[in-house]
Image 1: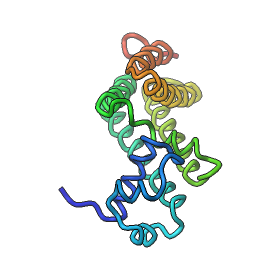
Image 2: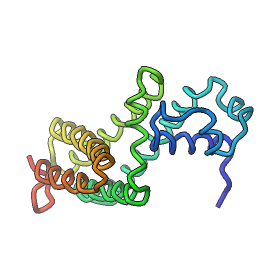
Image 3: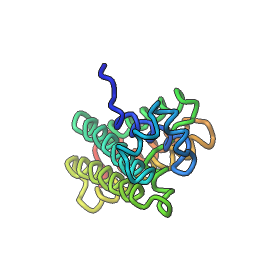
Image 4: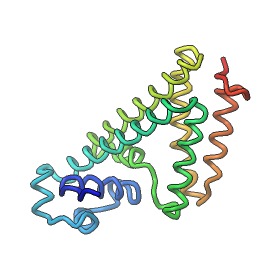
Length: 193
């Protein structure tokens, strides 16, 4: 396994700290300790400081989410991909003892302090919505309904993440999948109209 560069260690640590503490929940000292990077190196890679790092970390997280979605949607029916996505989150919640949230949501909540990071999160949410909507359209849903379903699914999953962390239960993911199935999919697995 290749060792991460200093730049990539900083980005990876920023994503993890976004997931656990939110954008305002950690300072440079915590980031440097987590990444095991010297302060001087931080500013060599991110001369504008934390705002620049958070923008890049959010962009990287968004690319990762969308790459995952694109992959599962290419290999599975949309309803099955949705369930796999929810299962991935259930595993993450259990393994982290409900400590890891969504870095895109964390960046979104910091829009006033870190507008560029929030803008990256918005782009990622829009891309995820489009990926799901496109898959649903390929499976027979009309374009407008597919777009609405994509947005509803992304919003629903984000809500499930928040509620799961608050209640320390993975049940919100099961509820989310069941409701998405009832709303957007026929029992035979065909998209509803």
